[in-house]
Length: 246
Image 1 (cartoon, rainbow, N blue to C red):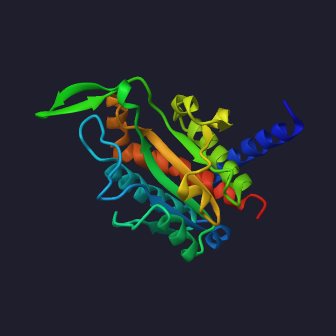
Image 2 (cartoon, rainbow, N blue to C red):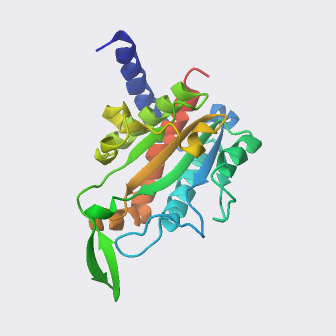
């Protein structure tokens, strides 16, 4: 293991502990109020993304989790702005533009994952023929090497990943089939040409909360209590990362 990689892992471990300390305090931290986090709700009403095993749109899942993440960030003392709150944003390029216009320090794009068509099976659910696959489950994250703050983007992804795993969430290896790992330990991948990431003027991360086509995970992803637990892990990771070295 290289010295640089060892130092990075040590920093991530330290920030994960910092995140745990942040989460342990109920009162908002005054020093975090200087940071503004843009929370981008993935997909739109016209293009709602993947359809879950039971027929719910990805947009609906993204909206639920984004609101939980926003609440968790605010509880910690960070300021927030929602991007695409009404599901009617004009384009992919408008997402990072909106975050830049708001002066955000970090852009977090919330999504839920799916699988390839060749992996799907059919079943009938409440009178509808839908598709499912129980092969893959778990969260993952993406950063872009074209982002001007790649180091901060990756650090935030790794810190969120470390916090997620400490809270019992298990990442997926599914996306390693197509996307190079930036941090294999914490399920952070490179996705260099993803518009929402490479056009962002600040550090940016796309978060995939889980696989909607997995029948058991879909139920978990829809549970408000679990959403809140996941949101707390994400928020504390973001808070620790942004505060580090600033």
